[in-house]
Length: 326
Ligand code: SF4
Ligand code: SF4
Image 1: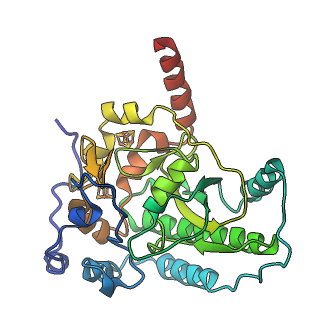
Image 2: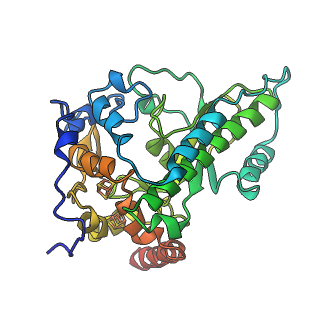
């Protein structure tokens, strides 16, 4: 029996649903497709008129959150994104792996982001219609203030998401500017608008954590309570190791997010999506609630891994359990 949910039943706004396209977002995402294919931009297109759900994307901005923070953060993000990067220095720096890693870690110790990692760019992450020739992708993560994000689905939580997207944009631009100064070309991908690469699988490869049942990454330190941005480059920065801390088995036995999701969008079992068996969120069920609640985020906030102080202990406990079994 699912737990009581104060947001159920959810009846989507008929004005919004009039804008739904005939094609399912799950079809666009490749749900049920056995073949490995490139991802398609399903939402947050920079040109909404170019995607089937573009009218719904535009409708998102008509919902008034009655909080000035939204407009202010959007404006701040725009200014950051439009800041010119410095020219690429003539001499490309060559460092040992340790020095590259040390330099990268400074973005975390300096408070630009809370996590940073590097993966080899896999062409399977590049959106259909986009191209990326760089060999590496650097991912940064900006953690939400939990006291704000726990207020989901109130607008205060959506405003916190906006703030972290602004920080994410700033971190991508700052890392790209640093690389230019080091003599390496770099392309910042600032989010939330989909651009060039789907970031979640890249962040998994860059050691951020594992995909959870709610379709977001789970990291032991931050749970799912963070936002991503990325930088594409050829700088020979050492790659991070993917990390596993027992999330997959944990999610199989947990249903907190399933019960908390008002429109029942979180699927209880893994699905095949473009040739990969993975956790999947029903796009068509999630989107109307997401649009009507400034981005929702309930599944992220209720996930036990996201609760402050819980994730690292949980990971340790699961590791001890694994060691006992093996
Ligand atoms: S709430 Fe539970 S099932 Fe959902 S992602 Fe978090 S751990 Fe996994
Ligand atoms: S973001 Fe989507 S999947 Fe997550 S709780 Fe909200 S409606 Fe459900």
